[in-house]
Image (cartoon, rainbow, N blue to C red; front, side):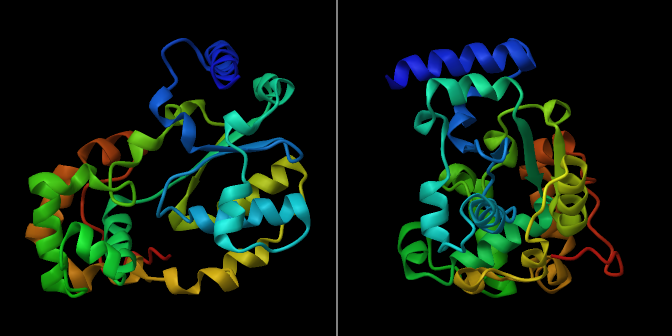
Length: 247
């Protein structure tokens, strides 16, 4: 059954976006909300939990915990054949993020957990620890976890194939514009802060860049994430301290 669903998915997406346009390795990164007519390309550390929880709230009318919201968001293998066929017209969107703030956010959030220290290394959540972490990424750690691996690995499509590309740096404005264009009502006030079950994930990484980065470390990230900078439309130039980039 799962194989037949994949065959149908391949036919639908290839027909809609073009043969060769789809990154099939990222197919499990899409979450579909049939009642909303939306398909969201999930990418870790890009407000993923907030967006998934919001979409589930729009679907069910209630606020779910982040684990429940993620578990109940439908992947293609959860869909019926009719729902997969409906992907021909479903609205596809994705949230992308500046690699500088994303990798710092992943570091600050994940290395507050002992499990990450045990699995990946005892990196202290300090500028010195961040430097050691980036050096480890540059040796053999980049592909060890999707929270800091390349965003482009999780992109199902080239950016120009999505119906809407949301920038993390302007999340509320972009999401507001998207829902308005679709004529949909959404709990946009949720984007002013974190959902109650998500408060321990706040890192304020975008406002702490100059606390953790040196020119040398910025150079490491520019090299490691060169593909993301290029394909996602971000400048590899390190953000100025007065850039006003939030998140």
